[in-house]
Length: 304
Image (tube, rainbow, N blue to C red; front, side, top):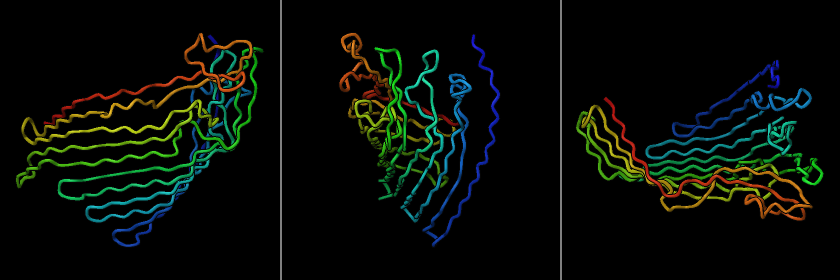
């Protein structure tokens, strides 16, 4: 067994400052700024040498937003800028035993806008929605690609590419309908409601190359949930929840992996179902984790 004992001292200073301004009883604005650090994972140390040992990550986070609240309506908007120094990413490089390692990229960022809204349209109908629009970029990224002919790795430099697993758009909306609600003066009673939930996620890349060939397509899924609440029927409170998830039976994937290589003397596609030709003698292997189709789940919560 290899000796992996290491001693690393990390000293972090994570200052944060913020202020809120109350414009009037229903409107308020705020500003926030903070610096955060994070140490590398255990694998980042054990799968690297003292010469390639990763540095800790640093993030500057600045947010500016506003909130509005009144009877039956809540609104919120938040602008954010996250500037990273030495963010750890996979770049295709391997260690002496063939394991993938993460490396620091000196400059990367996330800039975007978050929106939230919820309201009560009537005594029976309620709704809520949220959306995030962001640009997630790596200023400069070095990709290591295996050469199967020579047994070496070649270096490809990418500039201003998208961060892996960082969709530019994420939206969620839900609408709830109360079929009945009966309560006594003491606040005990029963209610039956249903909720439709929709979620949209835009394209995500499996690596930091912005290559569409190794990406997860956008998807939209819808769930339906039925809630039945009974007070003092059994115990203090009984809640029955019945959910039908992915009600339209949409086929989609939310995670995956990729591996890129060059091979001029051997075409792996007849022997490997994961292999795809990109161009020339460049190939990749890509795997996707499919999510469940239409499925249901029932939950019973009992409080004494």
